[in-house]
Length: 258
Image (cartoon, rainbow, N blue to C red):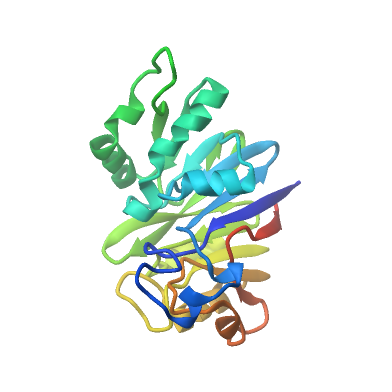
């Protein structure tokens, strides 16, 4: 069995092009330089798992022809990873059923406080999202839609957040530190999607060289960089990557062993 991965968005919180910017990346006509907010879709064992619900979710779903989501895996509650949650109502309507959400306690509290209307029972018209929060323990595997998934503890600035591992695939976004214990959860990967905000280090994200150092330590067969600002032009930055490391682009399709 394998995991099919679609990069729905590989951009930072501003997206690319960035409003008001006319740099080479923002002015590029190459679609690989057009980045919506970071999210990915996993299809494994006949199930569809969505990582995060950014504000571009509707656009991404229409672009990729997505009509079903069996569960959502959340990394953390920043707006560019959560604020598209209302777009899940379309998937609830199609399935005429609720969608389970998974994240740490910090994540679930944010959803309850900010989007409590999404956690109510369904109405007659399925006109709101109907979502079921589930709190997971970092580092402890959990069965989600019948698939074994491991929440990987990460640090995003001062926040404890989660990456996600499914089979020989892992998704680590918005990370400034990978705790030593978490590296043990990342052995033997075919495919790693890894945070890389810009060239220079940033307080709450890996910079380019930090990402390369983490990629080398993890040792995945293939590492794809995500969550990038317009500072990282696709072709110029790819030329700086060592073998086995490359930049993502929106709509990129990848595969890993389950």
